[in-house]
Length: 427
Ligand SMILES: Cc1ncc(COP(=O)(O)O)c(C=O)c1O
Image 1 (cartoon, rainbow, N blue to C red):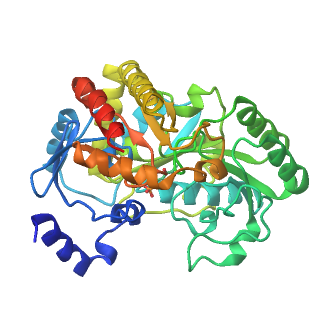
Image 2 (cartoon, rainbow, N blue to C red):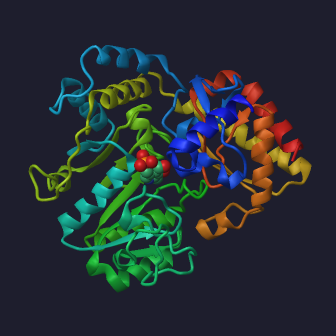
Image 3 (cartoon, protein in one colour):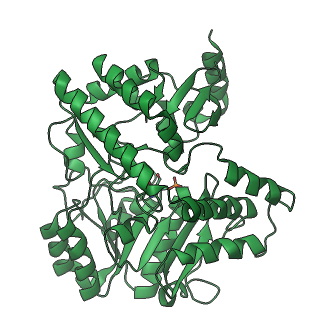
C-alpha cells in the first residue's frame, strides 16, 4: 500500500467519504484524492513528498501564495495574545477599518466565519430590511450551503421557479417558493421576474463573475439591468463576492464593473487563509442587524483574532504591493498559452478569465450561463486533470471549479506555461 492510500484509508474511517467537503473526494475526476502534507508559495506537497505547482490555491484565499510570510508573522504575534476572547478586540477594529478603506463611504462591515454564513446573513438582512420574502438568484450560482439558496433549477430554461428542486436532500422543497431562478446574463428573464414579482422581491443575489460552474463573465447590460431593476422595485442588490472579492481588483468586482450594490459578501481572501468572512453594505441597511436592529446574527468566533489578523495582514499587503498588474500579466500569458496549444492540437477549448481566476471549458464557444457550462466534454477534463497530476500541476478536481493564480506563481512562469504544453499534448 502506498503512503497516500494508507492515509486515505484512515481518512475514510473518520470522515464521510474521507473528506470534510465533497469536491475534495475527486469524484468528478474518478480517482483517489491526494492527502496533503504542506504547502509553500506556489507549491503543494502530498504525503509522499511529491510537489505540485498548485492552481487550486485552497479555492481562492491565497492571493500571494501559500504560507505567505507577512501573514504568518502577524499570526505569530497574535498567538501570543490569545486565540479568542468573546469580546471585541483591537485587531478586529483595525481589520474593520482596513476593510472599510476599500469600500464606499458610509458603509459598515460585519465579520463572520464562512462565505456560507455571510450569504445566509445577507439574505436574512435583505428580508428583514425590506419586509419582503422573495429572493432572485441565478442558475448555477453558488452562495454556500444555505438551505434557502441551495436550488439551481437544473436548467436555465426552468426559470421562474415555482417547481424548483433543491440540490440537496434535507432542503425543504417549500423554500423554493421563495426563490426565483433566472439564467445568468439573461436580461429578459430578469425583466420578467421583476415585472411579475417586483413587489415581493427582497433582493437579487448573484456572483458578479460566475465562478462555481466554471468562470463565466457577466455581460454589461445584465449588470446594468440588475442595478436598474432592483432600484426601481426597491429590492436590494447583493453581490456575492466571496470568490471575486479582492481577487479581480483591489475594489473587487463591484469596483471593476462600476456597480453600486447595496450589500456585498466576502470570504476567502478577506481572511487571508483563515476562517473569516464579511458582510458589508450601506450603514443604513447594515444597522438593521442586531444589536441595533431586529435582524439576528451572532457567532462565537465572529471576528476572532486569528481570522482578523490574517485578514488584516492580507489587506495591508494588497495595499502595499498592488499584486493585480503582475497577476493580470501572468493570467493573460496562461490564457494565451492554453488557447494556442489547444488550437495547435485541435482540442476544443475555451478559456474564460478575469484577472487571476480562470476556467478551461472543453467546448468551442465561451459559455454565457450554467446551461452552457454543463455542455462540455467531461471525459476530456478528466484526462486533462490526470495529465496535469502526472506533470506535477494541481488543478481543481472538477471542471466546474476555477483556477486561481497567486503572485508566487510569477517566479515559476516558465514552468507553469511549459507544463501546460505537455499536459495538453498528453490528452
Ligand atoms: C461565490 C461563493 N459564495 C459563497 C461560498 C461559500 O463560502 P464558504 O465555502 O466559505 O462557506 C463560496 C465558496 O466557494 C463561493 O464561491
